[in-house]
Image: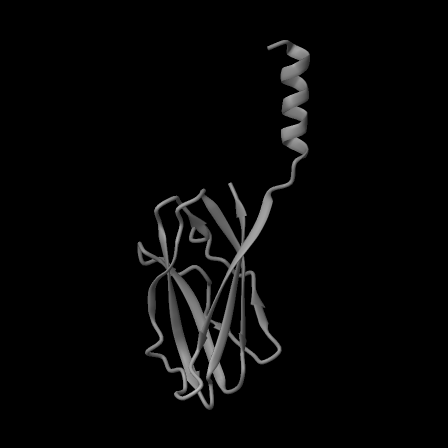
Length: 130
């Protein structure tokens, strides 16, 4: 390749922002309240591309809940459990290095706290693709 072409490709690559994506999951039980027993191994299995988690959002219908994500190597993703709310709550407090998810790695959902009339929980995980 010519030096001009290599330079043009390098400049374009440097100018491209990281690709931002998200995945969502929901727990819903109209008959029973959700509890701290809501621990779900492999809620997400990364089969596509290495990624970096940048934020976690949690919304509940009522009651109180706090959550975290845990990698399959045991590392907690958030520096502290995220207190969910009916208006939705967002945390960008990612433990250094724990937000990196390699291809083949799994994420677990951890319900750290749950009380009241909690029947629905929506979680959105925002990330950039490496």
